[in-house]
Amino acid sequence: MLAALHRHVAHDWGDVCPEDRNANDEACRLGFRVLSVYRSRAGVRFWIITEADRSSTCVLLPEDY
Image (cartoon, rainbow, N blue to C red):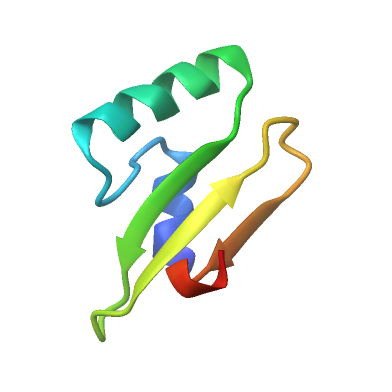
């Protein structure tokens, strides 16, 4: 998870589609929420979401959203 957080901070959005990748890049420029998608070594898919005001970042499973 820590490696994924580092990727998220570096604007490596993980396993998102090209449209979401572009939306995240634009969100960073304009100050909107960003969402990254990664998989653990065990293959468990999880999301990292940073809120638009950058006040919080959370890690969650898709079923927890």
